[in-house]
Length: 321
Image (cartoon, rainbow, N blue to C red; front, side, top):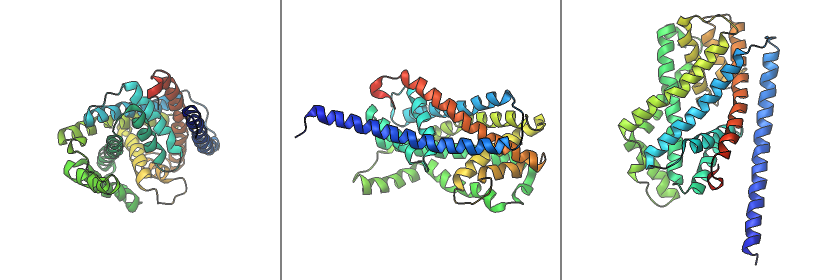
């Protein structure tokens, strides 16, 4: 039989190989995405603007702020004692793992980290669901209201199916926010998979849910600000247009997640941005802004990766994600 030392070395080697494989896959998809976005923007023949650096940093900061809010959410659920540094590091790595198709890499990262940290994996999965639901609601509700006030029902005239989609999504998302419903749904899955029920205290009360929803508006606000800043380098954006421009970008991100099955040329997010911005500027400029936003948000992920490695060094080795 293999000795304990041999088994430890084998587990260490397997972890190292798995890490290399994940990094390689993420790196490949990131490189492909960056190259494609760079080519698209280069074809528009834009001159470099230092303001793009500011927009890129703002996009990256939205990820870190989301990490802080996720950490607060986790503490609300079961009083987990995790530091802000840990929360931002875990969130940053989960965000980077989005380049592996699907949300599997993101949630698995948090679940694996929870096991190392001695936290309830069930609570972490629940926090992951809450996080994504809160982000979607924080994206859809204010953005739709702003665009309806700015453009009226004509907003839905060009592409009603795509734009009605987030409104329909509010129903199931809202139900998840209702504690009795979400608790019942999770218990059905828990009884089948774990042969046990999940305690009711693992779910947010109504006041906690509303407080978390208000907090998750902040990263969406940061995304909107970054988008308005970059848009202003392509076309004139008056103060009266700041809210519609920012709302277009935030709503486009939400629809891009929800409408994963909708085929499109530029992509669902870019199509929504062009649809809204073409009400304020030329279609050609709207397309350039959409492509530039995609490039800078991708470069923002480089900043997130750098932040992750810096944050990780400040965390005790046994707790590192």
